[in-house]
Structures are given as C-alpha cells and as structure tokens.
Length: 83
Image (cartoon, rainbow, N blue to C red; front, side, top):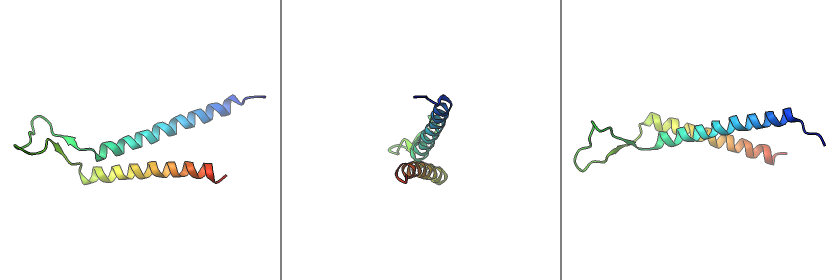
C-alpha cells in the first residue's frame, strides 16, 4: 500500500483553511449580535442598562455571516450525501 503524501497534505491544508474560515465567520456573527458594554465615560443613566444593543448594520452583517456558515455546512452535507 502506498500513501500519496502530496494529496494528503493538500487535503489537510484545505481542511485547515476552510475550518478557520468558518469559525472566523461564526465569530463575526456572534460579535455582531452581542450587546456592547458602554465605555466608562458613557455611564448609563440611573437604573438604565449598562449595555447597548447592536446596530442594524452589525446585525445584518452578523446574519449574513451566519447564512454563509449555514451554506458551507449545507454544501458539505451535500458533498457527503450526494455521492
């Protein structure tokens, strides 16, 4: 039995890049939907929340990142099942 080390290295490299990319996209989605803490100088009024909601642009970007993650997972499942 012979192992094609070049092909194994290519598979490892592509897997590493795609995995880091998907995790990065998911992280962008989490950060985009999370509440932001107010800085020390911008203290909340008495009784007000210490955090602010994400902007509409941040939420839109986060949802787009989540959609790309879902598309990558769906494509991976398609590649596995369709064969």
